[in-house]
Image (tube, rainbow, N blue to C red; front, side, top):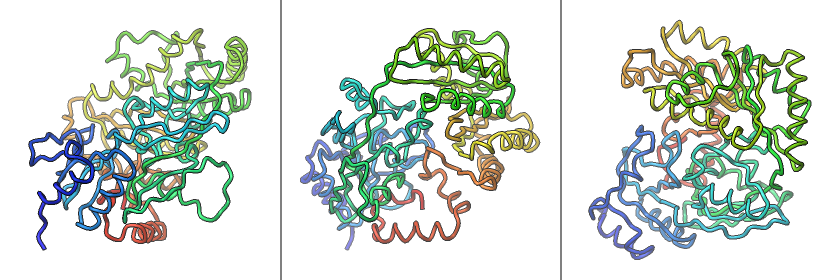
Amino acid sequence: MSFDSQAWLAEARALIGEAHVLSADCGDDLSAYTRDWRNKFEGPALAVLRPADTGEVQAIVRLAARTDVALVPQGGNTGMCGASVPTAGGRQAVLQLGRLNRILELDPENNTATVEAGCILQTLQEQAAAAGRLFPLSLGAEGSCQIGGNIATNAGGVQVLRYGNMRDLVLGLEVVLPDGERLDLLRGLRKDNTGYDLKQLFIGAEGTLGIITAATVKLFPAPGAEAVAFAGVSSIAQAVQLLGAMRGRLGERITAFEVISGAAVDLVRHYFPDTPPLLEGACPWYVLMEASDGGSDEALHEAMQTALMACLEDGCLQDVVLAGNLAQGQALWMLRENITHAQQMDGGNIKHDISLPISRIPAFVEQMLPRLQQAFPGVRPIVYGHLGDGNLHFNVSAPRGVAPAAWQRETDAVNTLLHDVVVAMRGSISAEHGIGQLKRHELALYKTPAELDVMRRIKQALDPQGVMNPGKVL
C-alpha cells in the first residue's frame, strides 16, 4: 500500500491539534528543527510534531509504528553530534518535546524534582534555587537545552567532578516505548534493588530506544559560599599534580577543575580584547578551579587561599589569582565560556570530546601535540576541558591560510590520529557529547564486537521496527 502523506498529517493533527503539526507542504519553515545548530547535519522531515503531554506522545508513537514512520525526538536541538535532526533517508518526523515543560514536583525534603522532558535546564536550576536547592548540571547551552535531551545524551558539564554527569543525577524516568506503551519509572529513590535498573537503558541512548517524557532528578543543598581561582602551570602534568593537591586539601569542596591551554587563552584574548589580565606572565597551561560549601564566603576563601599557597610552595603551580568577589569569579568563568565563541569566530576546527584516565592525560597530550604537527604542519590545537573528570575538548584548528572547508575534509584523518591513541590508552572517543550521526561510523571501529552485539540486541528487542531515531548511534 502506498504511503499517503496528507492522510498521515491529517491523522496527526487529529491527535495533537492542527497548530502543533508543522509541515513543509503547508508552507511551514522547518529548518530550525531539521538542521542542527552547527550547520553540519540536515535532513528532510515529513512533519514537526509538538505534543503537549505523555498521552499525546503515546498516540503519535502508535501512529508512527503503525504507518512505518520513524521519529526523531528533539529537545533544544543544542547537541554536538546531530542526534536531534533527521538523516537523509526514509520517512522521518521530528518529535519536538518543548511543550512538555512543566516542573511536576519539587520536593526539598527528599532533595528531588520531577520535571517533564521539555523543561529548560536553566528553569530547573532557578526553581531549585528558589527552594534553597541546587541542580548542579551546568553547561553552556543551559538557557535553551532541555532536560530530556540532557538525559538522552548523558550530559556532563563543569561540575561533574563533584556531582557526576546526568546518569548520576537521574533517579527515575517516564519513557514511551517504541510500541507506544508508557514505562513509569518515576521513583525518587536512592535505593531500589528490585531487578534490572531499566532507566539506565535510556540514559545516553540518544532517543534510539524510547522517548523520555519526564524524569525525577537529584537536588542538593544550595552552597552558601563559592570561591574561584585561576592558576598558571608549566605543563598539563603539573595541572594533574595540582588537582590531586587541591582535592587532598579541600576534599569534596572542589566543584570544578578546568584545564585551558595557553593557545586557547591567546585565542580568547584575540577575539575578546576586553578580557582582563589575570596573571603577571604567560604560562603554557592554566587551571580554572571552583570550590563551594555550606559555610561563609570568608571561611571558604581563607581555606582556598591557604590551600593555594601551600600548592605554590610545593611547586604544584607557577602563579595564581583568587577572585575576591562574585563579579571577579564570573569574569574568570567568562574566559572559559568564550573559548567556544572564539573558535567559531576563528573559522574551521575539528572538534573532539575525549576522556582518559586522569593519570594518562599528560602522556596523551605530550604524544599528540608533536604528532599532529608532524602530520599537519602549522595546525593549531585548542585544548581545554574538565580535567577533574578526565574529559578534554581537544579541538584542532586549521593552519593559518587553510580554508575551513578544506580543513574539514581532513576530519577523518585527524580523528583517526587522535582516536587511535585515545582508545589504545583505554579512553573514550565521546565523553559527554554522545555519538549521534557524527561518530556513528567511528563507534563501529572502536567498540568491541561483543559490545556492539549486545547493543544491537537491545535495540532489536525494544525497537524491532526501527521507529526510534534511525541512523543514530548504531
